[in-house]
Length: 376
Ligand SMILES: Cc1ncc(COP(=O)(O)O)c(C=O)c1O
Image (tube, rainbow, N blue to C red):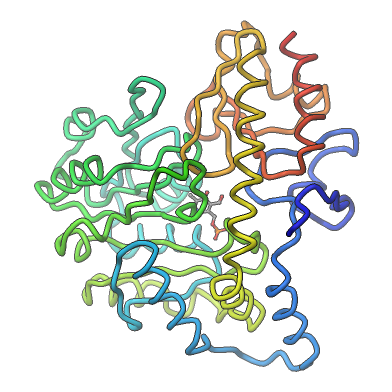
């Protein structure tokens, strides 16, 4: 049994997450977890270190096999080895996709609020950013299909989909994805489906649906972004995967990427292999722990004055509505109280905060105590 309650001091380790704030602040912002990785991953990394030679690496054949099997069994998706392209990160994959699929000044659409690099990468590539707000249906955020269709212009060439969605935690259903697909097919729009959070399903009754499995046209007109980094806490190792079934799209992507991205390290490949091949038990325990944190956060936050959190279907990133607190500068007030969150404005929705609950229960309880002093 993994002890996810074990407190590991991450301060002064040059952690992006922990060393951003003064020591008095508990950081619950950027999306990495405060848990040690699964023992098989540590063993695999130790083996690379002990070998002591760090030349150029290639992807182990076994990693291809493990991923092909995993996608077939978990996501009912049969892929071929040559559809896979390795990259050191998915943010670069987003930037490359935009440049490979669209021309300067063409438009790229996304549903907001959304993981901020989606918007940043579109603008950095000098493309037009078309933002369509998500729609609240009961207690669940979903795509607003009418608004999407109305916002499409002849200039729209690419839709950046986040599924499961960061920051609102929605897992889009097959029917919802089918509706998006129908719209995109009608308008000749390619879909880039970022599914980095697909193995962080909190609601065990739900199953992740991969966009490319909708039908052969969806597979041929999409790129799927995957990585073990969120699920197995390997973000700093840089091991990400883009799956592109369509030969022409894949050729464009490879052409755009040429010379810009370094090869992955042996650490990245070996960690990914160990995670996907030997990490199932740890992963199952992680999901149980995260669900416990989610439920505690949901109950506690909703008792605070003017604060509203809706249950998440996936991810460890809570999306919390603080508009009715009547407070301004919530992020600053929370930081002064010792809680470091992300302000919703960076994702395109001020009045919300995003809180990463992939931390020890004890730290989460302390975060909640401190939040109560702000939202008393
Ligand atoms: C939706 C989404 N895509 C991509 C990333 C980051 O990917 P990478 O660290 O591989 O660049 C994140 C990180 O939080 C994310 O939430």
